[in-house]
Image (cartoon, rainbow over all chains, first blue to last red; front, side, top):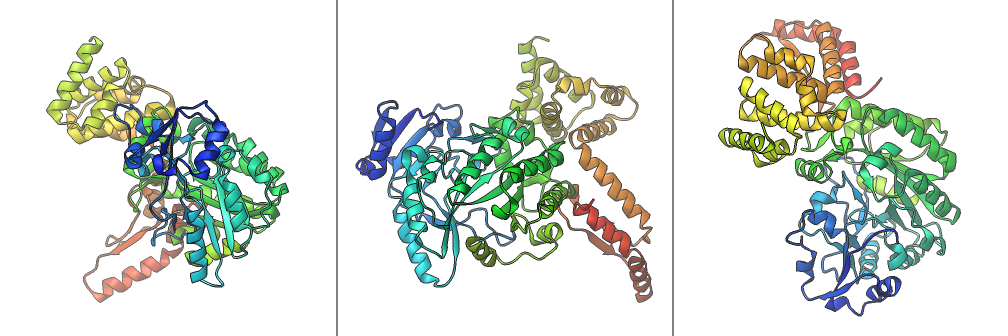
Length: 364
Length: 178
């Protein structure tokens, strides 16, 4: 584990859980462990913390999840051309601290890093979903409200997930990460059903904004390792930040990526421009006042989010899409949180319906 | 002014203008030279509350983007010329905000100017307008036609038809085509 924790909180109900035992065994006596009666109260911001969100990242709470685990991607909306991604929430918050992260707004009221002791119940929900839709394929990921692999070396949650998904031919598990923590995965057999994806940014964005994440080169090297171990790989160029040398830097990053991972081995690529609600922008600027990446040429877009003005953002999408096209393989690509007309301009075709694209990405 | 006196002057002006707390905090967080320079500009140009809030936001973000300070921006030749130049205080206030906006959004201002020139070159009749999205925030163009009879309507449609390629080129630019 490469991340610092100040303390581990365990709800009494989860004290004897397999997850708590594993974490306790992995961490030994290095970190104080505190039992709590009221997990909801423990998840809230701690009075007196100057940066409650940042402090929450260093407090791990092991707790039973009482809400459903499986949901549609929270970024989805009928106004956007979405990718049909389904999310399993087995943890909430992330030890890394990207200045642009939407969790700064989404988890403002319960910022403590929660990890759900009954996470294997999530698989029952997936079972019910596939039973209700015979013949359909689904792509399900754990990397929306948390990084899929950040704490995997101590939780080993990926073990249960990979075992479950690798036995179901109509499911694809997507483990999304900004780390290079893949050692646990290398010992497992994904049987072609597990895809590991990385968010990739140029070095300038990594240095300015992606605190405590692995360097872009380390992410690509980790992708190479899991590819050789039988996993599929995908890459999210998201958020794309339109800083002055962005076009050059992103195109160089793609060159670096393709030097290590041949285009034919990339399951898909997604792109999404930086977008921030006014509340998120305000929180991000307050927590990261010196990050120039948060001060791009962003304007209030029709969806109420700050985005790079349209010609700048779309030019970057087009340049990146053209670069991948020139790589010689038809890498499936989609845009995240963009309207259909933007898809048409970037890819020259009307985007498929979310369910269709979701199914396509699940079966690649 | 001492730092305490500057802070007191900022707080007094903020209270008078009912400046939102978030902007007051950003102003107080500026270095001493910058916060003093902004007080001076606010008084000289008689900035209204909204203008003052906008100036604080723009200066704060320019300082981060350009790795400079608000004092340096406000002490630059163009800013000094606006402050010391002729015209009423409201005119100079508007000019100052435009100047700050140009520094904060250089590519947006350039792109907007180029698209405005393209629209002008369409040479459409008075009742026809090609309207760009506010702040170029989307890829959508609006065309408006004002007419009083069928003949005018026909003539405008014909002129629009003549301008079809030019309008397509504007849409391409708005859509990021190089």
